[in-house]
Amino acid sequence: MNSITSDSEAILRLVVFIAVFSAMAVLEMLLPRRQLTVSKSRRWLSNLGLSALNTILLRVFIPIAGVAAAYWAEDRNWGLLKLVEFADWIGILIFLLVFDLLIYFQHRLFHKVPFLWRLHRTHHTDLDYDVTTGSRFHPLSILISAFIKLALILILGPLAIAVVLAEVLLNATAMFNHSNIKIPVRLDKLLRNFVVTPDMHRIHHSVDAVEHNRNFGFNFPWWDRLFGTYLAEPKLGQEAMGIGINGFEDDSSISLQHLLTQPFKDPS
Ligand SMILES: [Zn+2]
Ligand SMILES: [Zn+2]
Image (cartoon, rainbow, N blue to C red; front, side, top):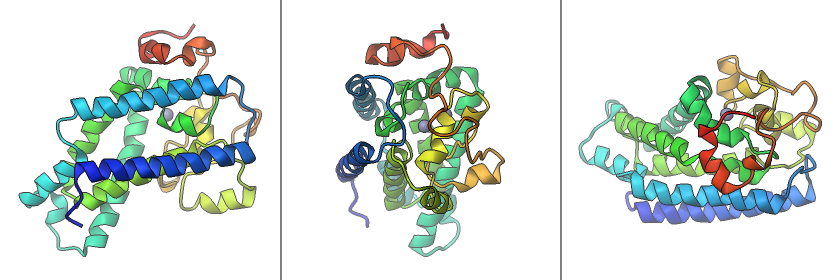
């Protein structure tokens, strides 16, 4: 458990990314939920390009990886989780829950604060919704989020394995719940008790401003119900509802170069 390094974490994350991404990409072809409206190859090139750029920037600009921060805290017996004696698995579970709750409130903050919304808006201006939407985030929003997560790690002082699990789980569920997969209604209803499903999170990408301020959860579905932001279905239904943000319907929402400058532009 103590042998996890930042490098082995990076390899684990890459392997899980490739496995989940491939599974979702195949299922999207076999069981598509909605018809795509713009060129898939152009969108994928931009969304995955943005994701690759974010991975590089994190390595360059974040002085210390989450795992390293957890070891730093462990060496000094630092953090709130060190105040009580837990079995390791309980400490891991607590961290996973608190981490996910932080992501939920961070997401609400990114919708509430105008400057943060401009950054997060890049995630919402995707004109279609599929597995690559899950990795479409503006680099500045990724860096801000990385510092917020780092602060949580330094406050709580979780085991390094808990940090790895939290990040891997978040990446995997983000790919799952952004996928364009048709899941039978009854199965979707059952899954929504444990995890955010594609039909649940897709509502968050609706062009309707009320609907895109619902279903903020990325991983566990409970926070939206607990804090009153849950919406079960979009007004127009999953297939007819519009995806994106009004005023960002043109080419500028597709090319990578435009995605980087989009936060500094107003809707047309
Ligand atoms: Zn959002
Ligand atoms: Zn999303």
